[in-house]
Length: 405
Image (cartoon, rainbow, N blue to C red; front, side):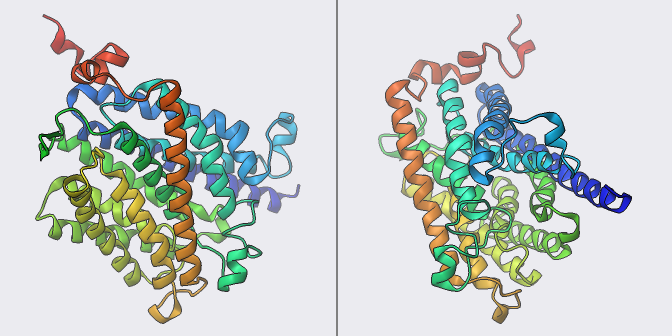
C-alpha cells in the first residue's frame, strides 16, 4: 500500500471511528433522558438497562446482525480483518452497531418502570440480531428491496427509498417496536384511576436536560458521519441538522407554552425528522421539517397519553415513531428541487417505504413481545412495581446513602 492510499484509508477509518464514538456517547443521552423522566425508584434500572442492551447489541450485531444486513462476516483471522484498508470494515461495523443499539434504547424509554429485565434483554437481542438488520439490509444493505437502485420501489417510483441517516431505519422502527411493547405491558399502576388521568411527574429536569444535550451533540456524528467516507462529508448535512433542531426547539417552546420537558424533547424531534433527508434539503426546508416535528411531538404526546390512554413513559412513539415517519415522508417533499432540495428523491417512494417500515416494525414487535410474554412474562408484579425496579431487580437504590439509618 503506497503512502497516499494508506493516508486515505487511515483517514476514512478515523472519520468513521469518530462518528461511532459520538453515537456511542448518545447512548448516555438516552440513559440520562430516561433517568430524569422516571421516578427515583427506577433510575438505576434505566442506567443498567441501556448499558446492558448496548453490550448485548454489540455481540449479536457482530455475530448475526451485520452479516445479515451487509453479507460480511468477521469469523476470519485478525490479519484478514485488517485487510488492505486498515480495518475499515471493523469501524463501519462499530458505527452501524451504535445505530442498531439505539433501537432497544428507544424501546427502554417507552416501557420504563414496569418491565422485567431479562425478557427485555432477550427482546433487544432479537431486534438487533434479526429484525433491525432485515430492514436495514432492505434500505442500506445487500437486500435489494427498498433503498437500492434496482429495487421494485425504484422501478415503480423512479427513485429508491431514501433514508440518509435513519429517520425510518432507526427511529420509526424503534418507535413502532416500542408501541407494540407498551401496548403489551399496559399502563403503570395508578396512571389512570377510574378512567381519570393521573399524570406521574418526572423526577429530575436537570438530568432530563443533560440527556437531551448529550443526544443533540452526538447527533452531528449520527448524521454527518453517515457519509462513512471522508471524501463524501457534507456541510449541508451539518447545517440541515442544526436548522431542524432549532425548528423543533422553537415550535415546541411555543406550542407547549414553555414546558421544559417538551422543549428538550422538541430538539430531538427535529433531529429525528431530519435524518432521512439531511443530505437533500435546503436549510430552510430543514427548519420547516424540524418545526413540524416539534409540533407533532407535543400534540402527539398529549393525544397518546390523554386520548388513547397509552402509557408511553418518555413518549417514544410520538418522538421516534411519528416524527421518524414524518421525516421519511418529508424527504420526498422538501427534498424536491421545487422546494430548493437536491431532488434525488420521489414522494411516492418515500411514502411507500415509510409505511412499509411502520407495518414491519409494529407487526414484528407485537409478535415477538407476545411470544416472550407467553414464555417468560414481560411485566413486574404490582408489588414489584410499587417497590420500584431498582430494589426489585438490582437490589440497590439510586441514592444508597439515604437508606442508611
